[in-house]
Length: 106
Image (tube, rainbow, N blue to C red; front, side, top):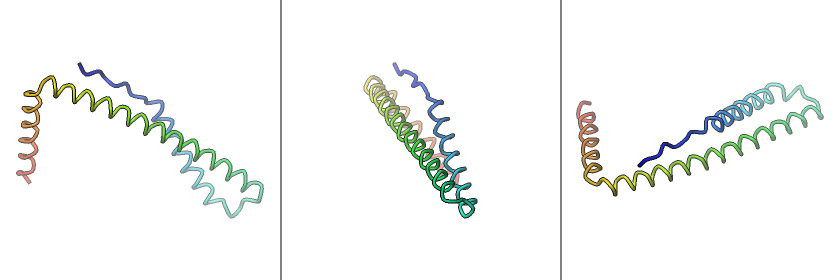
């Protein structure tokens, strides 16, 4: 039986938040870069680098999650096709007919 794969919205939300912060910091740095003094510029650079590193880690984690979920889905699909070959052939044919009809309409 195919098991439902749990989603990790917290990870996705954190990644989106990190990326928004990186973009905001980059825009702020570009706007105000000429006005910052030596120490302020160094502090802004450190903050930007930390945010970017956090976003990279989140992106790597999200990629690992997607790869793992894809492997699970592929395995479940493979098992289903092996257990139900004629249903799979029928489903594939039905999808092919629908796609063919959609292409022919244009």
